[in-house]
Image (cartoon, rainbow, N blue to C red; front, side, top):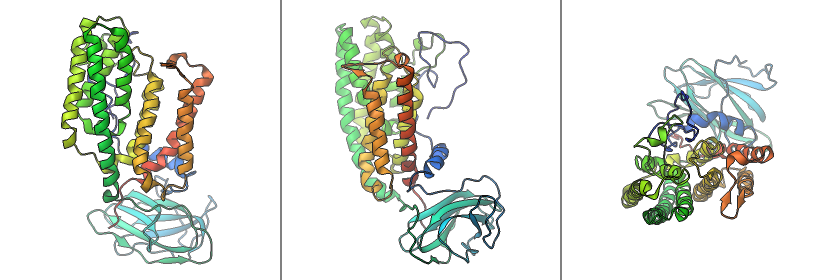
Amino acid sequence: MSTPHPPPAAEDPEAPESPGGPGDSRTRFTRRWQAVAAVIAVAGAVTATVLVAGTGGGPTRADAKGAAPADGLRHTAIEVSTGGCGRGWSRPQAGTQVFDLHNVSSTASEVDLTDPRTGRIYGEVEGLAPGSTRPMTVALGSGSYAFKCLQNDTDAVSGPTVVVAGKQPQGPAAAPVNQHDLIPPTLEYQKWVGQRIADLAAGTRTLKADIGRGDLAAARRDWLTAHLVYERMGAAYDTFGDADAAINGTVARTPGAVKDPDFAGFHRIEYGLWHGESAASLRAPAAALDGAVHTLLAGWPEQRMDPAAMGLRAHEIIENADQFELTARTDYGSGTNLATARANLDGTRAILARLRGLLVPRDAGLAKLDAALDRAQAALDAQRHGGNWTPVDRLTHTQRQQINAAFGDLLEQLAPVAAIFEVRRTA
């Protein structure tokens, strides 16, 4: 993600608002798990497979005997340490309850509540500081459970197995995902991206030729076609490195920013095509764009995507579409932000298609996610009229509300994907 910039001192009415300064690309996919933790915590309340993590920021007083405090839930104090992991759980029972985890050791710890037979995780708390207490809220059914304490620079320690008697159905849980699980879908996605870069190279070559012969009407048409190819590859932007700035860079909404010589790529050409610039003035930017894409194509076989980031990227693509496209902050004159958002949806579907085999047994809310994707797509497609898209600033209040609501719901449904595919320590 690009670093937030201070508000500009003045605005250029011809230059769209943008998140960064000259040459600041739309490489916004470096945010870690913490950036969506708040979203995931909300989603966890309604999505069965999201682990219900601790939500308190400070110490919580708990009755070691399990008395119910003001929240109406049973609280049990649990020790976190290498020598006494899980100590304190002496009266197991089914139902929603709170374990107040107290780290008595001298180092920070992660704590998981697991099924010791299958390894499935029912709850987790990360970054539990020495001497601190944080709650873990879980819904437990009948079965076997054990706390696992994973402290920094030490092997994982599992506490005693505790059995909850009866025949109560078990609550939400998820099998942990490791790096090895994610390598095959990541390689498959990387191959797919390579094919899309080849399509992109063909598109920028056509765009360059349009501008070279002075056919700006054709250039405006072919600009959008090529740009949407690029916008479908959102999970790969971080791997593109500096190429992303050369291909899809933006500039700040300040007077004269669009004239900066470092402003390059699709948006530089977009500004020229929709602000009356001559074909001669756009030949160099078009050649530079085409050259950057072909350089990316040549070097892509040597690149390696991070498997651990795949689940998070699915969420971030839509998060950025919501922040930058649905607000028209990256509109440099074409009015095609809704087309870009639609391509971003395709990009998220492309990632989820590769992760689906791992996601099906881990996300009981997958049908809701699929439905949310369909609703967001339908809301956008309603604004497509042949080859034209409604500009964001021409949406009615009702249309804007429908699109915003659809994307808000989609972000909520995607949040568990980021949680599920966070690579966890198991040893």
